[in-house]
Amino acid sequence: MAELTTLESLLEMGFGRNREKAVANTGNQGIEQAMDRLMEHENDPDIDEPYVPPAENVLGGEADETTAGDSGEIAEEDELYSDNPEALKRPMTEEEKREQVKLEELMRVKQAERRERERAEEVEREKQRRRQGQELQQIRQKIQDDEMKKLADQRRREKMEDKLAQRVKDKIARDREERAQKFGGGAPPSTVTSTQPTPPSPSSPTGQGPPPTKKEYDESRIQVRLLDGSTINTVFKAQEPLAAVRVYVQMNGNTPEGQDFTLLSPYPRHVYTELDMEKPLKELLVPSAVLVVTKK
Image 1 (cartoon, rainbow, N blue to C red):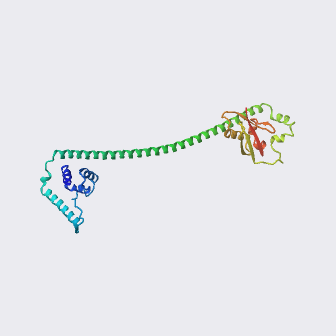
Image 2: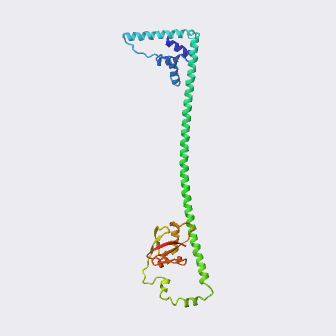
Image 3: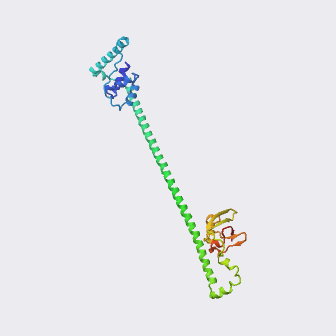
């Protein structure tokens, strides 16, 4: 019978007799189906438990008698093989040997395919894990690069502002030294003050400061027209010098670095010199004024 041939093949391949449940669970469809089931369930905890045929159709009828008869035949065959172990050890024919070799080769191929599939899945999981790690590292590196770029830009702006401020301070200091050398010569200061300021006496109060009756302003609203025609507006304290306006234009205007320029008032036209840079805005540009940037 086909079932006996399948069972004999399993026994000859080294499987225990309890593995006959693979034959029954596959519906006695052949040795290949039985081998597939054994490989799929080789790790089941009840794999070595004796096979117990299901007790169905116990009560009456022809079907019950047929089932009982078949069960009796299987029991007799099992008893025959269990009482006569030599029957299971009978020599295999050449065809059975070729079939067994073929089945063993098939089993090895299936096991190799399963190992290869598991290895490929493990390799793919490792690749995915590494890819996720690299993406996370790239995100962290990008955040760090952005922070470093922001910090570098901030430091560059601070250095530029310090450089411009120092340049203005140096220029003011040089102007003071030049004026001190020019006006602080050997002539007695009393003679200079007594002879020169006498003619422009009506205008002298304006040069020294606003008259007492003039309104005091705390702020000066300045509009500056740049070299390209655009304008910028800002508010300064009235006590700040005109040099503060010059520094503001250097930092916020589109004037190229290193480009020297002058400031002038269009109406009435007045070009501000280096001497005017030290004067406070309350003497020059209050409460508001328009200045024009021109190249030197």
